[in-house]
Image (cartoon, rainbow, N blue to C red):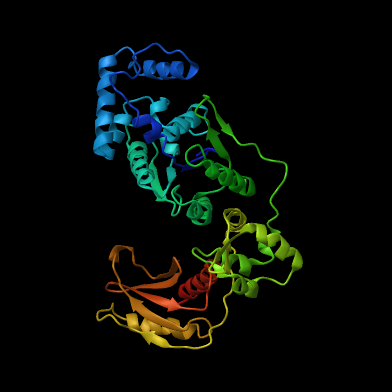
Length: 416
């Protein structure tokens, strides 16, 4: 891959493909008249490129199939018909149109082999999930003119428009969390970009804020112009020192689902008047039965995810445990040497492991000797004649502390 070539695109996804496009589609009347405005002329030009403007019978057949599969909710077949249309056609929706524009403007490579992955961040709605499945089928199809090698669809929990408070308190912070996770997982500012064309308007704002903080390029295409633009870098930077100086507080507050009473939050908040004044705009507050609760806002998540993205190897040592409870093996069938191995791990970390217990060992093909954290659990894997898993209980209260534990466990394993 040439230097500075984008191979990974994170794309926010909206519902323009369904509303108004396919919802108002009338195959018998679509594209029958000569265009009278700039947008209609662009559609004619797109159809002429595939010889569909002159072959109205073929075009109508494709449109009828699209309408039929849309009404039947047969989304995989619908994607197969969309591939027969030019991707710059407005009917194809904001995501397809904007990605075609990025390829045409050479922001993305013309060679599909260099377009390694597309990550779709879809809303937590039935329509969002359906459109995500259509786009995944569309972009992974090798017959697609703007094909990607792989396409992943991620539902952003809470990103919906029926409950505004959930949208604000869960949806937008989770969107930023996914942006950070994918940015760290797949690359650097030279190889990854964000397409913020689709979805709610608020998504654009936070995608741009995240991009400014991490120097990740953010692109956008408005439906009324045939250009995709790159948001310019603003001449100021986000001061992330307030995160780095008080990492434990931020890591605890950034845990998914964390909401604390005011007195609980004050117990973990640093005693620094400047910090306390600066942190409140980064928080969401809600009063329930006369009690005020706080959580990290979407803006706060921008600061947190930007800091993690620029400090990949950061971790925090957790508190030492206060009591040990031994090893427990509730299952009845274990790999050879499993119990002995678990006990050895437990004995090697008396200050940090309070308890070990075996868990289900499904998915044998993925088990190997290692340690990892999954969601909020620290997991050990062991393999001899077959594989087994066990959970390690520690005092780690956030992702950075679990990361510290896992790093030390894997370093220990390498020396065995």
